[in-house]
Amino acid sequence: MNQEDLKGFLDEKVQQYNTLDFIETDPIQIPHRYQLKEDIEIAGFLAATIAWGNRTMIIRNADQLMKRMGNSPYDFVMSHTEDQLMALDGFVHRTFNSEDVKFFMKALRNIYVHYDGLETLFSAKPMGDSLQGRIAMFKEVFFEIPHLDRTRKHVSDPWNNSAAKRINMWLRWMVRHDEQGVDFGLWKNIPASVLSCPLDVHSGNVARKLGLLARKQNDAKAVLELDLRLREMDAKDPVKYDFALFGLGVFEGF
Picture 1 (spheres, rainbow, N blue to C red):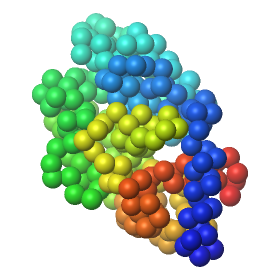
Picture 2: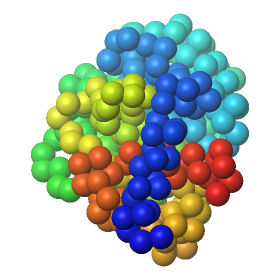
Picture 3: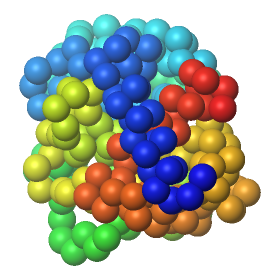
Picture 4: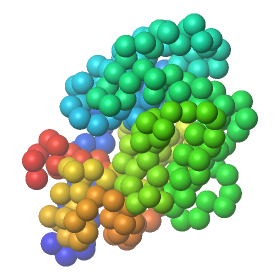
């Protein structure tokens, strides 16, 4: 396909998959249960953090985590005591365990108390034409309080050549806005134009088959390469094509 035909094909796939039906089978359903901005941010961040592996298991474990937090994630983060953190004992999703999630509660509270929240932290200037530097900065802040070394692996860093798929997905949820209602568009100070596609096995394989990506590894360099191609098709909203790449890979086996 030439560029025009490819864009037309992907635009059709975005319309096909960027619908409310998508929410029912995706981890984004977890933050969609909430109305308070901070609940949505925290529920989304935690659901995205464990978004690797079987999608049914991801949703089930994210649901369990919300229940352990009394289905009030922001209140739990801000007011938990050491005794209340015991409610998280025994939680595990693959290599993400209760000690990791307990630290996440403390790190998130530190951000809300000392940095005026997640949106303010990510909105700090200068932003540039990508949020990848913001993600690297976020990891530094996240781990500025005492922590176990093992927990660091659960927050990605593009400056270490990570594709940071889960954080890029969460940022898409928080920043991107359209009339379809899948993504929240909660964060008004960050333009969708600086978002990066959440690159994983499925979206990467589809992108390569379509000629959008030449690099074989799914890493930060591949994210940059894919960003450039997607922004050629829509400079203002490039990550809408995540719906197309993901849908083609997961639902159609493209």
